[in-house]
Image (cartoon, rainbow, N blue to C red; front, side, top):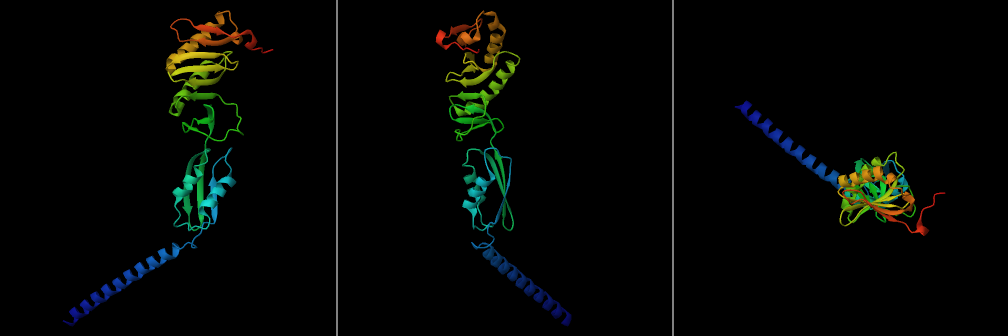
Length: 251
């Protein structure tokens, strides 16, 4: 009987000890969360920036990060706010941000790499297959000019341009611009200003371009005397000659 009472006493003591331990842990957790959530606890003190940049600068990225995060508690920091601010720069393609406790932010940023100009004031990034609109006043890379009546046609136009350029390898012709108009007709501009009206659909336009390459040399015309060549015919093509005052002189 005495042993039974001792056993009940041990069980009761164990339960009380467990309750006390839970109480201490809960209070400790509340205290820790309260302490860490204070504005002056764990402030952001360092920023590490990973990325290869030509148009962006680490200083500019750090300045934006400092403006958004300076003095804030890293534990409570909403990374989406910083991400949105960084993505306001049109040269920023992707942003990933991680917290490294107790006080460091790690930023991984991918910069847009322009493959072509787009319409009048944009650039096309072939990797992200997107158009972006930075300030072009200080940008003058010798890229091909592409365009269409809608931005969501950018990938189609770029892929078509690549096909056309390949078809013109080892020919005297060089494309400097390609535009897809409202009736989805491809219009190409050569480096001497001559325009080739290639027609609709990429593959049909490619076949028309190949026909031009094969046949124009037999026409007896100089490409520098031609304003445009309309290839939207099943057989042959129509030619519009330049006025004498606009003939290209390459001498």
